Image (tube, rainbow, N blue to C red):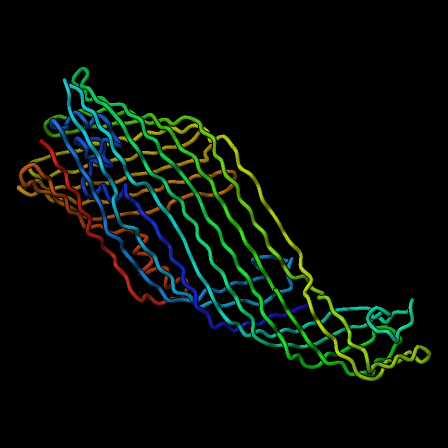
Length: 489
């Protein structure tokens, strides 16, 4: 059995990247998430009925900067847990790591809308959920090996042993030296929305219908390799198992060309075509909104592969036996030889599959209400979407508060989660609760929106995750200032 102890001097960088544009837009204006107060371009991708509040023409864009948290920590990798009984590695590799948690900034939304003869029309793009991880690791671990295994010497190993005879033995030795670990990988889950919609007032109720095209992709790959030379050696201890007596001395040489290697990749993509509709009705103190959606079945195409080369218990050896003396009559072995370990026996595990499967249609609904009393405003909303086979789920819920003055002030909180399961492969954004506030004001034909937001992912990266993994926060940004600009006439 091989026992491995590794002390690592490493350079490991890992970066978790994410984006919640839908939550960010809620703080630009709550109409992006609450269908009862959608206004023109402010939420028509959720409730197309809002397009009836469009002026003659509107154009809008919104963006958010990135937030970053950096943590210094140490990851422990228990090989026996990761690859179970297929490996003789029983110890834990400890990798000092710099972990970055980063909200990706950039353009969240861009849209155009206009009114024509009682109809409202809109066209837009909204960035969707994103989750990414990339890492790079380089290290020079110093390793200690203890090897104890049964072997049988034959004429192939030692020329002095007559053909047909054999000597069962137990071989023990220690070795130590430098290895090298190199690993890198990345993975990206991405969704976006392209939206076109129209609206018309019917029986005093604002009604809208539209089409969303949502490309979805999961791409990733990783490689990892332990290799190097464990040399010099030392002494090998060879003990006969039956009635042979071994008084010879054995030196040791070990050449470990590859200890453990693995690689994998995945590439999945598809596009959901979703029809959505919405209703909105406003009174003096109350607004109600309701919208629904259903997507058509679509095919998911892609492939994934995993290859692992795992060392087994017994290595390949040879014996340099120029000075060994084998006495078959007295069953003794004397003299001197060198045991050379030139290769660790490995088992390749390969798993790969081509994916061409049908993703069933989804359905969902969102409802919201808004109350206005004097200058105070409050709203509630919630919704869910799900596929008929439960392999897709989206949840959203929240609360918006407002104080209407010359420059309105808004605050709120929103929960968001979206999840796909494609043939057992999870594709998901991180569940999150976002919080913040915002305002807007008008200069000429321009409306300027500003908001300050935070979320539980950044909060966990600053306060919770360091305690869980024993790390130390080096740098954190908890709040992000977002902006929006709308032109209308």
